[in-house]
Image (cartoon, rainbow over all chains, first blue to last red; front, side):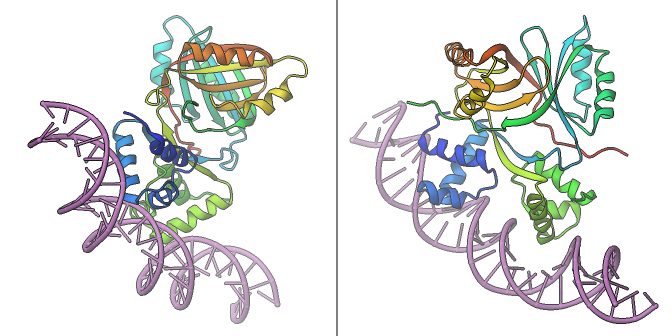
Length: 148
Length: 148
DNA sequence: TTAATTTACCTTTGATTTTAAGGAATAATA
DNA sequence: TATTATTCCTTAAAATCAAAGGTAAATTAA
């Protein structure tokens, strides 16, 4: 579907705060709330908007560690991994990627004991590399419209 | 702050859909809507809930590529990078990490020309590695309570 | 132990928002 | 040109939210 200036304005506001009301957004961009609601509905139906998510601070839930883990799967072990990974409660993101590694994951862990235990579960599937996340430079920035 | 069963139930629902109404959530977990609102407010104030984000399909916005790029900064180039990266519209996530690389980024790009142009902007800061994302195995899964 | 305080939740109420319907103006299509 | 779609409006009903005041249970202090 085509995204005009108004749709981009709506997307920008909703990406920053998914709970903004349609009335408030409408007031800011010069539309009535039903008009905003209709546009949002269409973007949902078209798959432009794929969901609304609440960000939870892993640190405040008692998780001390967040890590990026890559996996280079052993011969014939990628498929078993893909079936199993959906059960891993620690994994918040998991992508298949090109390059030397097949998989990259973002995981949330209670402590180093937990990390160790999690790594032990992974090493049967392939060679892994672990990177502890030290800080967020940019967190969930909105997707932006092309300039010009 | 302490997260009891009810708070976890609220978090679980809001992580899946940030636009659920307090009334609906309340009905499902056996609380009134003001009670849910009060709990959510407290979790916001305590920083447990750090934001509400709308997920936009990069593919539907005309972006053909999503990639993971790591950066191993040259001597004295990390700080300049950290100051500059916030201006890069392509970057949706950026973390400082331990290990051989200093930075890992998630970027959204229009096409391979765009990717090339973006890499050219990065290589002044350090050595980079690019991994194209082929598919999502797990996308923004909720943070879960410890079992037991 | 009792008294005071805090906490969590309730109900009620008024303001706001959402949702649905019907209609007008504009743009696109036949 | 006539028809059809699209976009947005207004209106009104239904739902939700936000604020206030009150209750009961748990916690803390005396």
